[in-house]
Image (cartoon, rainbow, N blue to C red; front, side, top):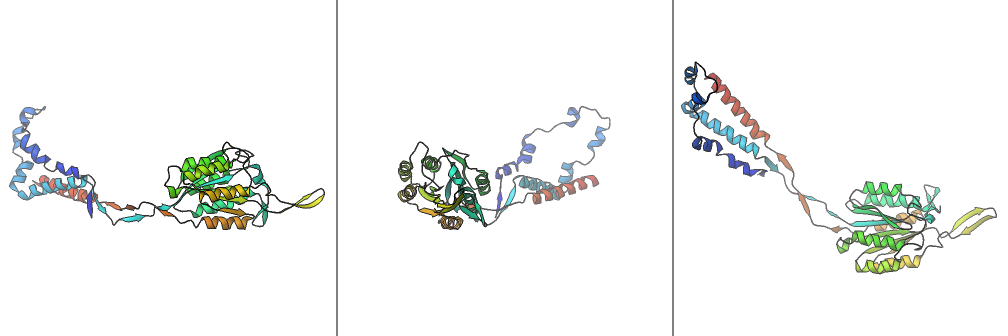
Length: 326
């Protein structure tokens, strides 16, 4: 269908008739600033009014040119069929532990030993890239929790900020409770089914002003669902001066608290002992069903004003040629 962007411009259509009807005629001989001795001869030349009176067709061409100019000024547009925009997805907040223990190299990536944070960056980065249509936010925590990226559709920026994070950037300790509290604050304005936190840590809460279970109680009141991921291998071989020995690098992981956080808020606790398990966990999280938001539609528009404007110029050019010939 055709629609006019500025339809009020059509109010100018009777403007020439109003000017002709109500404005007083100007006496050219009295108002001229320059007296011409042959002015009487010029009066004998055919004027536009005389030409239009002698040939009514020219008058209609003048009217057509004016109507076309006004139509072009009203900006006619062609509206296409409504196209529905995909507006479904979730708002996910990721909280990643940057404490000193994340530097333990008990993970393998492409056949080489890497620290826990490097493996997390790799797997979580792929998870972020797959969440097309979702808004992703990023919280980094150590001694305190910091909002590194607010909720945004710009997944590339969130991924970049995650890659730029470094162990110890937020301190050497672990403030799990503060990270949950910050997520509650940032997601409070969202619909109840759009408050989701994915928290990854390899230790126990050793810093911060809020205890994890206290934060979980507040999360329940605020309808925040928490998925927790405990990272770290159960066994690791260490070589030292006395030979080799097997140790548990995850002995500081507080699985009871991590499980309680998820259970209280309606989420789940996952245990990632290697990169493969971590990838499976994020694949399971990737299957969260998106919540459909309000539908929005887009109608493509094509500007049509060049057509009436072009025809107006053609008609005007023809009138100029007619007057020159006469």
